[in-house]
Amino acid sequence: MTIATDMLAKYLAAEAAILEGKEVKLGDRTLRMEDLGSVITGRKEWQQAANREITAAGRTPSIGGLSFALARFGGQ
Image (cartoon, rainbow, N blue to C red; front, side):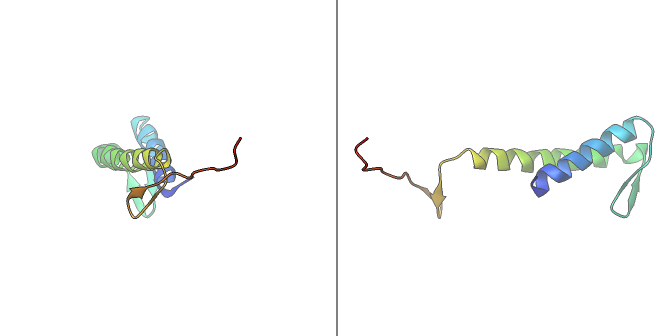
C-alpha cells in the first residue's frame, strides 16, 4: 500500500463510522458527526492522490518527463 491508499482507507473507515454515529480517532483528533464535512474533504483529497498514483503507474516510463521505449534486437 502507498501512503495515499493507506490514508484513503483510514478516511473511508472514519467516514463510515461517523455515519453510524460513532466517534473516531485519527491521530490525536477525535471526530464526531459535526466533523463529517472535514472527513469527507480529507477523503476526497486522498482519493485524488490515490487516483494520481494509479494513473502514473499505468504510464510509459519517463526520465525527466520524457518518455522512452526500449528496442529489442534479438530477431525473434
